Image 1: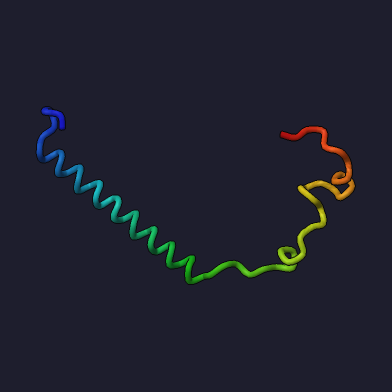
Image 2: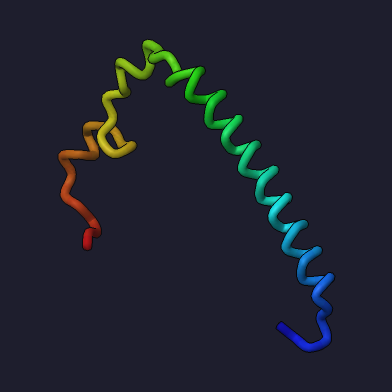
Length: 70
């Protein structure tokens, strides 16, 4: 600690930071509980039947030789 910082300033900053992080922790726990209670989203018909593309390209592209690879 710098000699130019008083004991009162150190205690005040510690209290402020402790309160700030305590408030943030309470908000985080409330959000966690909210989303845990809500559960995972329901599956839709699109989720159950993915598109028939391979790697974002048409199936015809899958048969072509690769132009570049690592």
